[in-house]
Image (cartoon, rainbow, N blue to C red):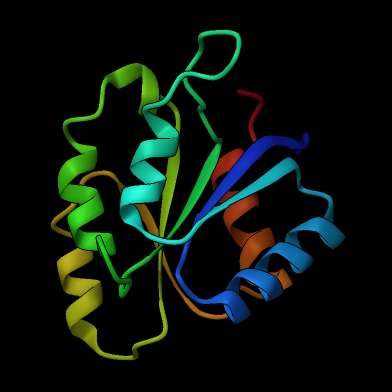
Length: 138
């Protein structure tokens, strides 16, 4: 598997962001890891063109469920209306610290969610996701 261009992590937890960023950096799986603290900040990031006029297009998006301002579910509802060029080829992984089946059941209702993982992300979980979704050349 080749290195991903970028990963977007949308999570309000400083502790989880620190752990996940450190783990992803140590694993060297992406050129950059971008962190946003809630769904609104994530949407703003995805829909704001960069200096060269292109929209950011992370290869992988880790999305927390429970956040202030705009939670993961609200983000996904708004994400459907984001222009295709802002979300093309983005793999979305829903993250949760809850253990209930309700989150898993609700996540299946969203076609934009590619996978669902519990926190924290471990090296094994990350490798499994990368092997499953990014093993073949893109």
